[in-house]
Structure formats: C-alpha cells, structure tokens
Length: 237
Image (cartoon, rainbow, N blue to C red):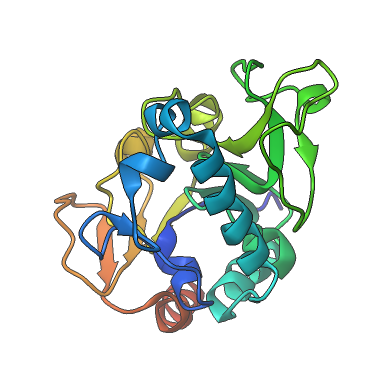
C-alpha cells in the first residue's frame, strides 16, 4: 500500500526549545543586532566582517545544542509516511534528529559559498557550496574560484531559490503540518495555499493564527507538546 505524503513546514518555534534564538519576538533584534545589519544583503555589502562574525557565533552555538522532542517526533513520522520537511530554519537539527528529506528555504548555517556564485531552480550547485561544520570564516577566506566566502544563507533582499521545490512538496501533500512558524515571512508564509483543497492542514503554534482556512486545525501549544497532540490526532483517524 502506498504511503501517504506528509509535508512538514517548520519555523523558528521548532528550534526555540533547543535554545536557538529567534528575532521575531524581540523587536527586530537578533542577539542584540539589528536584523537589517546581519540578515540582509545590504548589511553584507555595508559590513561583511560584522556579518561573518555574527554567523561564526551562530554556527559555534549550533554545536552546543541538540534536537528536541519536536524534531525527533517529526523524524519519526517517516516510519509511517512519505515525509518532506520544508524548513525556514538554517540549523541542522532536523537532520541530526533523523529527518532524511529536508528542504532549507533560507540556507544552511554550517555551509558557505563564494559571494559571486551561483543559484538555479533547485538551489546552489554542490560544487560551489562547502560544509565547514562549526568552523569560522573571515575576510580574506577565499573559495576555489578566488571569491570571498560568505554564509550559505538566504538574506532579506535575496531570492529564495528553493521555493519552487517547496511548492512542489506542498502540492503533493496528502497531509500538511505547519510547526513553529507565524506565517508572516514571505514567500514561505504563502506556501500552505498550494495544498490541495482535500488536504487537511494542521498548525502547531502557541499564539493565535491569523490564517482563516476551513482545512486548518490549530493546535495551540509549543512544538514539543503540540507534536504529541498531532500524532494522537492522526493516529485516531
């Protein structure tokens, strides 16, 4: 019997319980920096050294935290479903928890690429992206093509090269689960609209959700507890 396709859209609320800080709940500040200074392409042009230092610190912090029960519960869904995770997060906690198919809309914190290269429909060429783990990069660290290395992050003001792959995953879903995202950051916030009209949508978020959609079931809880509720709901159907 063919397994149902379950697409999971995740945001910062999934990783918050692991100790990964967010900026949406702190007046536009991220670790005491203006978001525009460290998470925009303009910020990179103004002060690349500041941006590199900021992501060096975030990268080092990532290796001090672990996946939480929500990451693990999402990974365990692969036991029964054909699961694709579409995440707005740049950490690797989904992979470390065991998820095997993860689309990173906003890039990956442990990876870097030349600042002058290169993207297509499916994202950046494997030949131009380098996984450096927890290592730091600095001004003067060059890629093989001679260009300065930069974080492999999609900043404000840049295109989201994997958005088409994410749309494909949502369109194919028999069940759509949204965890830990306020659905305020576009284009990711509009992804749920691509789900089939027959596809049930579950959203786990402790706050009220502005979205009004008859397919939607709101589980008003944090990610770890909400995942327990979600699994009980779908197992009872």
